[in-house]
Image (cartoon, rainbow, N blue to C red; front, side, top):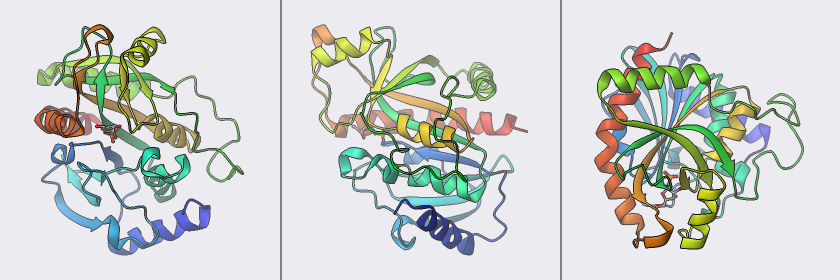
Length: 275
Ligand code: R1P
């Protein structure tokens, strides 16, 4: 499912379904409950993951499982509405299939979104957080195994995972549109269990501002392929170690859905400002 040949086959299949695919498209991965963040693309072509041979299938509520190509502010975008997680049983490499496919299609810029718990006590549920850096706490890497030199080098540099230029555009776009946008470090854990108070305390001490079960490994795969990355977390709940409130996935999805409008406004504005 993750060999260069299988990624090539999946990509060829997608290209057969999308006439005149433009490689200057921005790739977007939508996180839990954020399916409504990208709607109303012009000239949209939608392909359910189930119709893409060899493509992984979404098994988590809040991830619709469809690929959508279309235009936003007259710019081409390729949207993965639904992602894959290690806790679903996928390897880190399998979970990064959308990123590998985007790289194979020639995409040079991706926006990764997710739903995450806020660790920084100054952040509120409902805020968006621009990811400035990451901690991969999963113990897994999508680069494990033989390196495909056509994709990237064996030891990719990770000194700048999240593109400065895209971050500056995001900050300016948020300011102009009145969208509250925090900035911080995202830590990825394997899950699917949510964090204990002791783990939450530890992640805070490690310097993380938000915690979730995706994104970091996708960003690693993207950096490996030389793809520019921007990450936006939708903070769905506050993880305060000394007074932890119970959380459910349903509540996460509900809060993410509520923040979809702000996410949509921000992404649209950023896209409109791209070259
Ligand atoms: C937990 O509610 C789920 O929401 C987040 C977590 O990673 C986990 O999968 O989903 P995304 O990261 O896919 O947005």
